[in-house]
Every structure is written in structure tokens, then in C-alpha cells.
Amino acid sequence: MWARDSCVSLIGATAARGTAGRYKKVFCKSLETLASRQTRNGQIPNAVDFVGSIDAPATYATIDSSLWFVLGEYFYRKCFGLALWKKHAKNIGAAMKWVEFQDTGEDLLPEQQPTSDWMDCFPHKYGHTINTQALYYAALKATNGTEDKVNVGKFVKQVNCKLWDDSLGYYLPWHWKDHNEYSEKEFWFDSLGNMLAIAFGLASRKQARRILSFADEMEINRPYPLRAIYPPISRGSKPWKDYFDASLAGKEHSYINGGIWPYIGGFYVCALIEAGQGSKAQEELELLAKANSLGKKLSWDFNEWISPVTGTPEGGRHQVWSAGAYMLAHEAVESKRNPLAIG
Image (tube, rainbow, N blue to C red; front, side, top):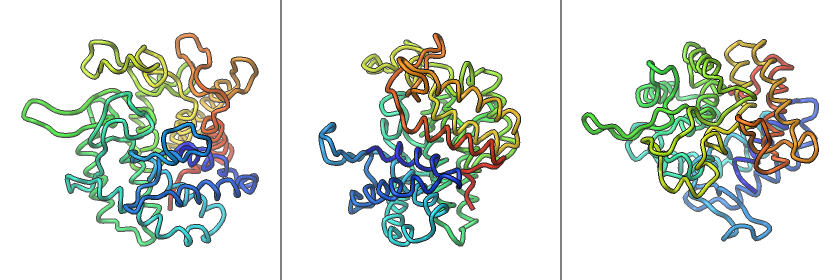
């Protein structure tokens, strides 16, 4: 069981209040499983193995799994009440403390090592990433009943200082240290990180409009929403690493290297709703439905990713986070509200 996949899927599946009860048991069991494998330092596992498919009963070394766990607990509480939240209060607090301790720069922003979030070994990134900062912002809001507005405000300023690029109109994927005229950062567009920043409220209204305009103008949302990164990383470019050849991402427009990931499309639709673009959200939801309806053998395969070049479904079939994120997007459009809003 993958921490992020299960939490993304079940946050989406329980977004529609009329059918949320169907998923209560599996949501609870997933959170219980993750909490039971938490380390003494507070880290939530990346994956828990029940079938011998990985090298250990549980694997770690990720930062987003702890944050998705906290958000899973929050949205479970929102749907089903306080009982599990109270039961796991120490687990939630320990997970947040573990993430806080990743702030080695003492600037409120947690850092991460390469290959330590959903993107795994591609692209190469480290330090401050927009994906992690967006999740951390949401987790801070979710866990602060009496929100520390001073620290949260400082956090937002720090994110804008380190990651927002006003000339590009979006958050940089990652940024670490600057050395005179040299800087450790990249400029490609991280679709999930930017959409989470909008959906969870980290981005201002003006920033949200600029991010969404960029995605539209560059056709990152075509032929289906949403390409994982833009532009794809090409051999010989500055971000390129030779080890990329060992994965499907070694080819442009393939896998995470510019492939279309329907689960990211679900967060894109929520971002559009958050930004007040309901008509556009409806349009993108229809395209997302078409993307999920594709199949290698049968229709509605909910595939892992889709080639933007050929339009064919690729990767694993029956991806639960593709289905869960579609349910999330559908609820956003139907209810005309952002189901990821916190507070």
C-alpha cells in the first residue's frame, strides 16, 4: 500500500458526501496501517508491503508520504468525525514534527533529498520543492485549530521568495542554494506542485490566474489534462542526468517526462474551481473523463499515464488515484466548490 496513492485516492473517493460512506472502512484501515508503521522519529512509510513485492515490510525515505497522511487524517475527520483524529493525535503530531525537522535551513521551509517524493528519480530535484511546500502549507492549516497566522504568513513569504518566479508566472519546481552568479534551481513547470498550491490556497488569486494561464497557453492541458512537467527534459539539457535512461522518463513526452497523468488532471480541475473558473473546469472535467475512459483492452481503464503524442494509454491499468482524483474533480464541478479547501 502506497501512502500517497491511498490518501489521494480516498480523499477523492470521499469528496462526494452522498457516497462517502462506502469508502469509510477502507479509508480508516489505510490510515491505521500507515500509523502502525510510523517510525519512532515520526516518519510515515512510503509503502507498506503485504505481498512481498518490495525489499522490506515497509519502506521510507520520502517526505510527501508523511504530509499526505496528515491530510488524509484531516479529510477523514471532515467526513466522518473526530474519533480517528483523536486516536491518531500523537501520530499526526509526530509526523508534522518530523517534517518540521527537515527544515535544516531554519527558514520555515522543509527540504528534501533527491528521489524522495512521488516523482521518484525523475526529474532530479532537491532542497525546497513546490510540491512539498504546497502539501506542508495544507498540513499546517489542517493541524492548527488556532492557526498561528504569524508563522503561516512568514511561511508564505518564504515560499514566494524562494520559489515564485514572477517573470515566468509560476512556482519553480525546486530551488536550493545560490552561489554568486550560480544557483541550484530549475525552471521547468511542475504541474502537480503548482496545482496543489492553488487548490490548497498557498497561491494568491493573482498567482493562480497566472499559473492557470500558463498551463492553458502552453497547452499543458492538451490533449487531456495534465502533462506532468513542461517542457519535457531533453538529453544534453542542463537538468538531464544520464541515469534517466534507466526509466521510461528517458524519452521526451514519456512517463513523468511530459506524459499526461490523469490524477494530476483531477487537482487541475479543483484548482480551476478554486480560482473561480467554473466553465473552464467543466470543459477540463469532460476531457479528463475521456482520458480515463481510454483503455488498452477495455474502456474506462483509468490508466497511469497517457502519451500526449499518440493519445494512447500507457503504464499500469486500474490506477486507483486516477479514479479517486476524477471523483474529486467531478465533485468540484458538480458542487461548484473546491473540495480541497481547508478551514
